[in-house]
Image 1: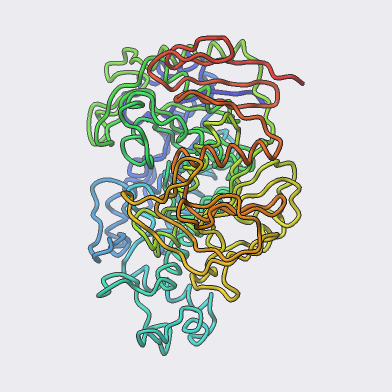
Image 2 (image 1 turned 180 degrees about the horizontal axis):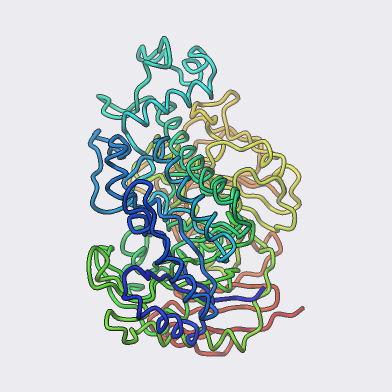
Length: 631
């Protein structure tokens, strides 16, 4: 598949006389795609029922006339002020019960049926008018950004009660599932159930997890309404742009409604804002060497292979605690890394920096005066390289890692120790795999087959789905479960028999303990166990124990279980040994160097701020190698 480039553009921000010149420069740069419209509702419908489509008609004509393909965003992330007057209860509430305010964006509650219907109506009107004139759609913008998935509003409470009744059927079923006999929490009817906030101490964890599932379902339903409205009038593919480490709704479930998954990649902003265990000093101007790759692999799974970077950082952002400029060459590296992981398109945010409002400090490819910003030349270099380079050949990776949004919610609700986080655990093990030169596919928790994977990791899953359990039982490759895999039911209760009830391993966790960072458990072979350790009773072979004799790594044939959270040294050592035992070749990569294998090539990326050697060649900082692989 041909790899393409694009940008995000806001014609409403600029004089109409400037549009043709912008479109010409985009085409001359080598861009194919331009995303527009996702924040333009107040211009498209300045008053209820009064529409102004003419300016958008002309903008689309100018852009397509220059040979660009348009991605049109639905504008529901920025509802106009008059919509709030119509629906004064549409605002989300924070955990203290305070309503969010108008004056920025994403000021709506996913559970508000009135605004959901109004947004779907607008999406349908846009599809009816432009369905045969544009090449792709984007629903809304960055679901969950700014902590906007979970709302503690009266609207959410009413919808939650309906959701509970649909899920459990009777209040007796709910009481039994949640264990409400404890602390006299029994309910007589669904109308008595509130939201799990502002309780004296922690709420019932089953109640809290149910609320997180409900909040995710509201996002799924919200997106489905817009997708249905668009499909009634347009056959163009539909996408949504997800964000890095936004885990409070099920991206797999949302993505199954659409053809393409996209995400917004801001490597340096993310390093300073949300990378667990990131080395900020070493990668301040490059971004973490594994964080982007993790999300590339995650959204490839969400899109069933079809995925884009809808927004790629081209310079300093404005929203992180600090906002340095990228190291020269990194804009190019980030783009090629996305293509190496299978991206169909990389689109830079944004074409031109806007000199006003909240994002005026956020760089674009152009400065506000239309002169070229630093990222422009690197974008031009990528475009030139794409013209001459062979297409990247997609291939199944040799290693799979299961990532599960519901497990993230479960361990946020009941961490048992400060810092237990499903994303961070998966990312630690993913980082270990990448440091060994291994390419990885991330898979959802309902994966029904592990065929073709030499090595599969299943870390920290709340409980195994029936399809995944069957896939593990049938897998020919080596499967590593744990830590904290299958120790609870889907309702967050301790199962009978006690877990982990893992295929091929006779093991029972009789107790789980957590301990602070300053008190890790050592491992005789090197490294240690941080935070989490299961006390295991087993008849399986114990491959490794802590220095005080607790089982850590169990093995029975091609099934293994990790009973603790390994630190960086232990993770690399244990994962490396298992990978080699699974028949894989590992590479002892220096810090900062990363590999991604495709069907025909090996890409090598240097994230370090100093030169590094690989295979007899020296890579400068931000350097890239493309090496042919034997057929």
